[in-house]
Structure formats: C-alpha cells, structure tokens
Length: 175
Image (cartoon, rainbow, N blue to C red):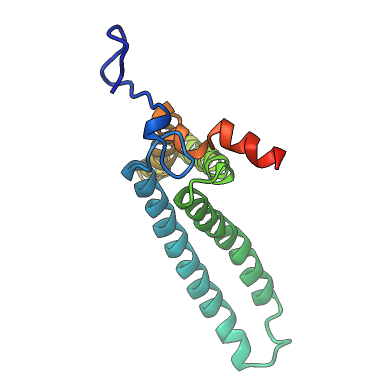
C-alpha cells in the first residue's frame, strides 16, 4: 500500500516487503499475455514458413535437382522473410516469459519493425488506389502489435518486472 496521500491511486509503488523472486514487482498477467501473443505469432509464422518451403521445394525434388534451380532460391528467400521474424517472435516470447531485459528490448525492436511494415503497407495503399482497402487494413492490423507492446511494456509497473533488485545484484558482484 502506498503511504503517500498525494500520489495517484493508479500508481503502484513497491517496497522491499513486496519484492518477489528478486524483482521489484510481482509477475503480472499482462506481460504473460504479451509473451503468449508472441508465441502464437511466432508459431504461426514458423508453421507458414514450413509449409511454404515444403510446397515450393517439393515439385523440384520430384524431378531432377537441376531442373528447377530457382526453386531453392525462392525457398531460401521465404525462409528469410518469414522464418527470421517468426524466430524473433518466439525468442521475444521466451525473454518476456522469463522476465529478461533482453526479451523486453527485443520486443521493442520487433515492434518497431512491425510498425515500419504497417506504415509501409498503409503508404502503398494510399499511393495505389487499386490496393487502398487491403493495404490500409493490413497496415492497421500490423500496427496493433507495436501498439500493444508499447502500451504494456513502457508502463513503469510492468517495466519493473524486468529489473533485478539493485541491492541483491550488488551483493552478487561482491561475492
């Protein structure tokens, strides 16, 4: 409970008695929900990557390996375009689940990239009137992820979950 009568009732402050597992605040459900969203997006992305590569390479495997050499390049491009961001989502989910600072930073990086991709899609839609509705809708959907990340992970009470207690960290350095 906050002893300051002038502070906002929404601001939660934590003292030494409320520390849990060396963190300044107890684990919250919001950070867990963000981690689960990252696992879902990463899992779906890896699933789509696997199917895309499978159905791109499979016709080339049945014939001579040299018959369609471009298919292997296409499969490599698909793996880079879909697989790497999916792995980023999964790693972000792991970092957030274990309340690691690198997971929070990676979430901001992935959210920034998703935000740029969303804005790029909106720009394409506004520039090309034939693709206005699908591009703007896709862009708005892509902007939901960064919005969620920045709203949740920039709040002080959730950011405190990623900070170790300074006193315990100093004791670990001096041992």
